[in-house]
Length: 262
Image (cartoon, rainbow, N blue to C red; front, side, top):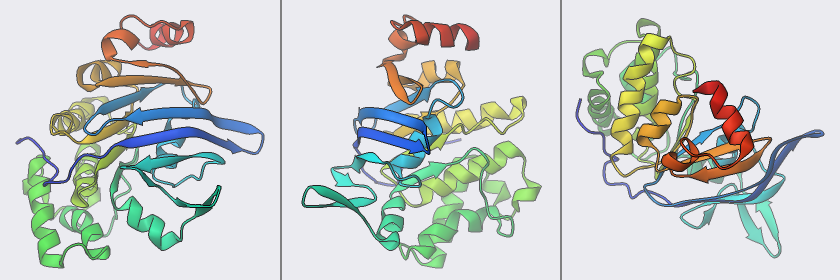
């Protein structure tokens, strides 16, 4: 499998500024501040229900924060400034922004009636970025890069979970995003299929793409992360290089969490 690249797209800088999100009385994110440099691989860990997946969904405005904002390359996501306030963008404008943010979900989210090739080619055609022949050529190239060059005509039901997730990664790459978000990309897989997906992400991590990865795979985090962020109760408790956060955690809550998962 050859090293994946992003086809000339410059990696993006990402800023999450004082983000709060709640559902009713339940505060899911409680003042999250995080700045991610272009090309940085950031792995987010924490217990179930700590706000990790919600944070990813706020980044591409699938969830709207009550307070705070997200910006990519200094462009506000989902909102624009109007005087002292932030005003929601139109759905069309938000969709255009999401086209520059790759998202790989836990459960693949492939179109069951489309082949692997057409699943990957669909978004560049729908957004008008490429013609259908151009998109299909790109899709074939990307599927080859994730090790599925022989399965371009297969439907999702004909693919293993690991193969479906690799199609989903190729689909995220097809729009040439400046940042790619991974929401527990191996959690829906049988254990023997996890490695093939992690291998593709490792290739991607060496390509200079800005990645934000939510995962429970601590060994994987240690291997590829530039920075590990530990979240609990909707707050960033601790962050730093893997050698610090995973091997010499400073916070008691981090130590307690790692003692249960390592």
